Length: 307
Length: 301
Image 1 (cartoon, rainbow over the protein chains, first blue to last red):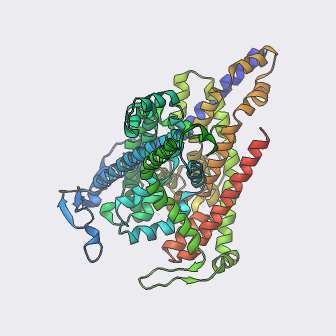
Image 2: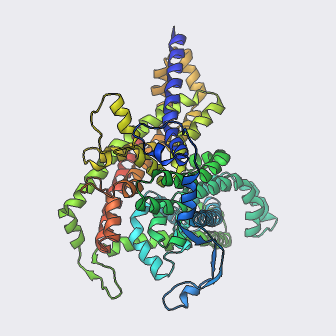
């Protein structure tokens, strides 16, 4: 009797979850199919559930609307020597559709955030977990408190700080606050707690230097954690629209999210074009997510406070 | 350092120096781009601070805070933010717990597939998600009006985002779909870690599914629930992208949230001190709420 009831519940749960899953995937489905629809199908009052006629027009429009040089390599620190604080450009790439430049900017921004975060957080997390030093509890408490605060409230002081450092409207202004956010340190500390003390003791007796102990013993053990943090930082910085919005302004410097947001502000009813842009922004990061989702899941679950 | 009594003084010194060297790069970014701005946020909230090359900050004490209490737009934004939090936090928690417990019983491949699906709206990114919802809510070409009209629920097209009666709820719905991904992942992992011998013992004793859940599993996943409550609260308070892209706080400030109003004050009104005062208020509210949730979670343990 009990078994039959439990069976019925299982079937009900499965059906419900499948329906919900369909509803949750629908917006993405609508973006992708919408990006291939003709204007007539887009602006039809009866929704066209599956495109009857496929077109690349929306993508052509996306590629031709704005142009930008593929890259502009600035002379490092040159903004501190010019009068108006602008960068001196050393090399300029060929002119390409701006969407491609935006995508490249986003990749660069996400990779830089990822590398810097992993490097600094791995070192700091290891120190907090394994080093017994004066002031350790103070630093750790500060980190936990900062994590519990909404990071967006510091937007005004952050903008002023970036403009006085002459970093406003550069990718660094987006990257540095992401690196400074202490979630990564917290996550790496969780992983580094698992390093056995005897191994470190043995290394010390062998006379290994501190750096050597880190690279030879600690790093291999926290490597899965670094992988989790890397993919987590990559995806969350890619989608950190708020930071990008307040720090970047010129057309060339935009990220793909910002570019699409600006485009939708200017052509708010051209849904075909906007969907093409949305697909262009979302598909690459979804592919990255699906490939690395195992590490990603690990990162989220390890980051949760235990007990 | 009570714990270090077994360690020699030279060793303590070595550990301290090494510890700080390892911390240095991270602390540099943390102090410069998180701690310092947070301090400045509190500091400038006591000043009348504006934009411009020669603008001088004048100390006005609690002037900004006094003004906040009389600012109708701010109070409206505060009310909207609280509505969002009060509605979305419990629904997100309950929904993700239900989905997670339904999918943990399935085959591992199926569990992981569903986990990916419910996480998709988060990965898709706020801009892409928002623009497609904007289309779905559209007065003329949106599917919502079509579906509701075909089902006979409404007779005339509704301008969902342009009508103060519906706009905030439309935003809460999108926020919901982008908020459940992480809680589901956390709950799936927490439910997987529940002590199986306890569950089996209870089943042998003839406990029903519901009893097993509330009597055994619920207590064991309490720390996860607490964590989810806190992060969902913080996320709901920070709700910004949806507002900025969909309604810009309109119609007539009916969808302003504190976060959006801070942005508006900084970028449209250039009143930095005033915006920072709002930021401080937001920080205090979140700190108090997190502390309450933490206390409640500990006592029910």
